[in-house]
Image (cartoon, rainbow, N blue to C red):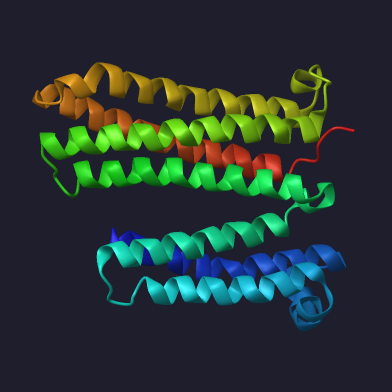
Length: 246
């Protein structure tokens, strides 16, 4: 897992300045190249820029922590805490800030729950494939991942309903009559498929994990879940860049 943590932390570190540059270009309604000299002013004079100053430092800290030799539990705790801080800062500078503290909290909980769900499944897949874990580990890990996924999905449903209400209100017809609503339905449908596969894994395959065929099916299903969750992330990106209907 350490190699994966380092790679992901490096991606966060490299993409963060580019994301800030994109925000500055949006503020100035200019190209990315023309926004470069504006970065110091944006970081000094705007709320988003000041938050991004801390966010860039936190991204650097995350990258450094992944390379510091430390006991596994300590390293995991530090990475977890720093990642949560990054999500919190992302929530503060998202569109949720226009709707107040509750919307920011909901946004943070939604992003954190999604990260836990995806991270648990990816960890299970890595342990079962590259780690070549045995039946006992796979059974124990699957039950633990199912528990994490269950709580994460519950949080995603609650926070997702609140976020949809912020965007669409009680106008349910907008779910099919607007681009935002249709994209939301595709996202929910894809996530629902992952939930169904996860339920099948836990209640139909875990009990037979001693059989090689059941283990192979479980690993294959988890791989499919990871791919589908990547698609869910794609829908989330589209939603974040699609104005809610008014």
